[in-house]
Image (cartoon, rainbow, N blue to C red):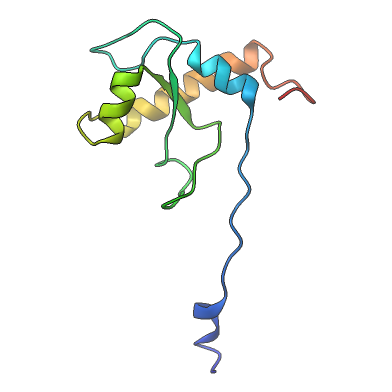
Length: 110
């Protein structure tokens, strides 16, 4: 095997996921972020996979999630509902800022 071939045979370890049950519950306590729906909580916490470069079979970190009702969640997963990436990122930032203010990420509490 030559030096140029070696990188093709070097498998990379799967990255570790950040999980936080308290933050997931916090996200589910918000109304559906689809502006045409706005269903009251509790809702699903949809993980946005376009954020941290996750691949097939790899769930994104818990930090990258938005609230969606079960109908909108299913439609989005099936490709029948389109939500702009910028809207998803805005919602993620808004939720993270609110969670920090409310102390969701206090050290030692997950």
